[in-house]
Amino acid sequence: MSDNCLFCKIINGELPSTPVYTDEHVIVIWDINPKEPVHLLIIPREHIISLNEVEEKHDHLMAHIMLLLPKLAHEQGLDKGFRTVINTGSGGGQEVFHLHVHLLGGF
Ligand code: AMP
Ligand code: ZN
Image (tube, rainbow, N blue to C red; front, side, top):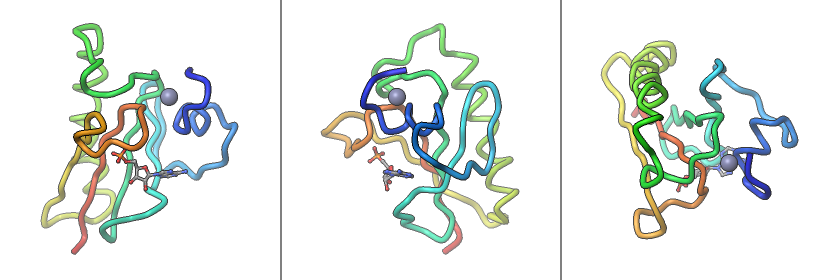
């Protein structure tokens, strides 16, 4: 938990959200400003700032997210395929500094 982190507040229930999926490792929500018909955010419960801060100890979490992505895509009907995006750092277009993976598709 990090003070003033938007995604930590969503995870802790301080801000309302309607998760499409949750488990002990992640929460999955709709992006508030979808860029494609399906635009989900897979957010680890642990406050990790970005991919730059991922360490060996996060290997299980990162594998978990990778394995979850095609399952979520299938649930959303993205049978023709999907895109995944991880923006890292201000130079990478990251706006919310709590690691998350974008899952996009449906065009
Ligand atoms: P990034 O640029 O990778 O940090 O992406 C942050 C994403 O979070 C953007 O696509 C925003 O539209 C999205 N976002 C910001 N605030 C919220 C929110 N309250 N609920 C859901 N998505 C949000
Ligand atoms: Zn956070």
